[in-house]
Image 1 (spheres, rainbow over the protein chains, first blue to last red):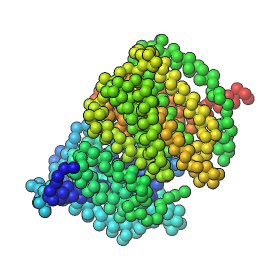
Image 2: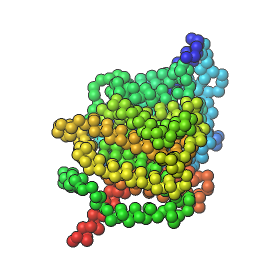
Image 3: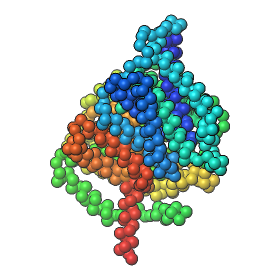
Length: 295
Length: 339
């Protein structure tokens, strides 16, 4: 154990919240896609990577930053739509096992394509706001971390509004709960499946744009970040959006504290150890609730 | 329904495989490989034989157990590192180290299975994925024990009852003998009452349970066998290469096993063998062809795209894999002859 002061703990906590915001966004995408398509989308991390790489490439041409971000998010949303139309849609009658393998295949292919186009050198985006880190309760918080938290928060509010207040959002939610009944109510599950992939990819794209200034973009970045989003979604029980958000934040904070208090080398192991522990003890997520078992 | 009945009839075969003439020809061809080819090809075949053992385990758990495990490379690594560490640092004999690896891996798989196998479908895959990554990080971080990122060097050559395996030719015969014994063992297991029960569990866990089958136990046993085979394969690899490093046991490598099992076919015990051959041959071909079409530096990327795409295409158009296709072809030839 390393001896830490209050300030150090605060520092870890704040950076954990920023990372947690990122995980929360990915994990909401996961949950939406999972519940409408019935597939764990292993390519989620690659959507993040595509936005990061496209953003970094466009930024180097001198395009204004807001346009770069928009284009990058659009690029990953488009990738999601294409994946649904041309791969998941034709395979929609396959078993769960087959679908998992298909999304793994897509993720490998996307990574390969990115390597072919961009090579393996890391690329970066400029930070959204230049300047010294801000200081809060003795901890120094990089400005980009604040951007991440604010954007994650705005996204959450927007998602809440989308799912609760719009017709499309409600239809999507209905489809997540029961596809057959939704169809009887005049909602097209096919359209909703496409929509869910686009939403998930769009959220992943936002993540890609905001994390690239912090952690740089490489074709390999998707794997770990996608898997973490996945762990976060499982923490939240895989079926609830508030659960996914909570799971993301919790994972970010635990990981950051664990890295600081236990060992930084084992930082990534913490998430997956937590995953196994949780699956064994509470397979329905931290919020528990009804069993999501399908027969 | 008809298909299931047909499958049930097929599975009640005698000890002799139904493609035996084809297999005999292939076996004879295989025996000649080290005599007529250079050391590069023989070496390649040794590696293929080693992979076949682990891939057959993958076929058993995926095809018959119906579980996508994403930690086969971790079990492989546990075998390889147990062998490597015990023989290189503690001077244990290779055979004893190999057995120790099997016991350790089997024990860990038994424990992991005990706590996770009642999870269903993808949650189970997730748990195995998590386990695989934790093992990989452990191998990287515990560098005093494992050599860390730079790997473990100086693993002695394999010796069996005083006979040291030094040449690729000797390795070739040992490894392929082991591979065929493993396939035969798995085949007989699958065709036994145990195997038929396992298939019933895969077809419908609820129905099997209603018939009084302890669903969890069968999956658990299949999981342990598959892990033990991975460990055996890993130990052989460690002694053959005399050097191992953690990236051989990463998540990506686990996916490669999924690819091999899927390409070969999940519905046949020969799937692992076919998968390994197809994937290895394609890899070698790609390494020859891609530099001609693209620049040298993009070869790795193109290979990644190809295998990722192959996984998707196989799953959409040919979920039964090559073995399924070959089976159909064989039946057609045989029916044509009888008619």
